[in-house]
Amino acid sequence: MNNLKFDNQRLIDFIAIGRLCIDLNANEINRPMEETLTFTKYLGGSPANIAIAMSKLGMNTGFIGRVADDQMGRYIVDYLKKSNIDISNVITDKSGSVTGLAFTEIKSPTDCSILMYRDNVADLKLQPTDVNEEYIKNAKAILVSGTALAASPSREAVFLALDYARKHNTVVFFDIDYRPYTWKSVEEISVYYNLVAEKCDVIVGTREEFDMMEMLTMKGNKDDHATAQKWFNFNAKIVVIKHGKEGSIAYTKKGEEIVGDVFPVTPLKTFGAGDSYAGAFIYGLMQGWDIGEAMKFGAGSAAIVVSSHSCSDAMPTTTQIEEFILNYGKYKAIE
Ligand SMILES: Nc1ncnc2c1ncn2[C@@H]1O[C@H](COP(=O)(O)OP(=O)(O)OP(=O)(O)O)[C@@H](O)[C@H]1O
Ligand SMILES: O=C(O)C[C@@H](O)[C@H](O)C(=O)CO
Image (cartoon, rainbow, N blue to C red; front, side):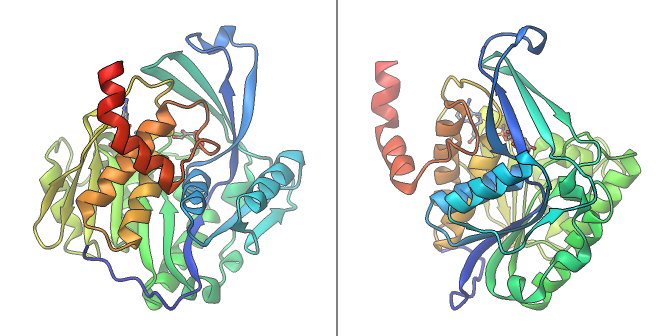
């Protein structure tokens, strides 16, 4: 049991809101991007990856977002459909916007970076009028990811979605998902992140992401406990702070502190860890599992995805995660 309440009468399990993009992951690994010649195309964008994770885990999943009216936009919609994700609230933007691209560089298993092309992207054109109150009312949970706050009108659309979610008791997950693109100043980042975090039931982010959020309000704080406590004065019931391969720690409003299991592997690349963790963690919470069990499932999923070339394509099923966790000890012994 955990401390979240989902309305199990609702037809939709989970809706993600925000960016639907393309990942172009370097085929030549252990090489800087300057020397990389070929890339493989995948669906990308943190909330998109989390939606794929949830659907792979068998959850009835939908998406609220805008895609560009181009070949990439059509690829994205097609991929969502094939992944059993409801696209009734995915709108094709006709303003001449483009699809966001993330080129990834895999210099070594631990030295990876992402180069994003995000000028005039369709995902940030999401309008408040695109957000359907009934859709959110019929869902058990929604996920907001922070990059959707980086510009208007997407920012206002997210605030409206949050209002609908609070009005109808739809559980809100917030993945801080900080990306240093589009934002104009530290003040802007801090204000919008904090305003959204106040309205969420579960907040998930890395230590560095919380540092960014606290830049104006708790500058210099490195204490996870202090970070979490602030949000329990608002709507938060669970706050999770991630520490890369060192694992993660969760705090609850009831005063619990739970250190999550981690299954260290030598990764193929580092990115994708956060999205796979989020998907499987949220899945576990929605099954009513204890927080520690859900964190363990998240960590298992992340270990699988960092060992794979893609993020979205590599999202595992429940059976794959269970088998990975079961066999982890044996696998480490052989290594
Ligand atoms: N090398 C690794 N081996 C096994 N598990 C890992 C590894 N790196 C990360 N993880 C798992 O993934 C979780 C999330 O990782 P991390 O803190 O790097 O998130 P993130 O920075 O949001 O990820 P991303 O790089 O995708 O943005 C960790 O808590 C851990 O369980
Ligand atoms: O979130 C993005 O826009 C890029 C992701 O799809 C990328 O693969 C990643 O960074 C996952 O952590």
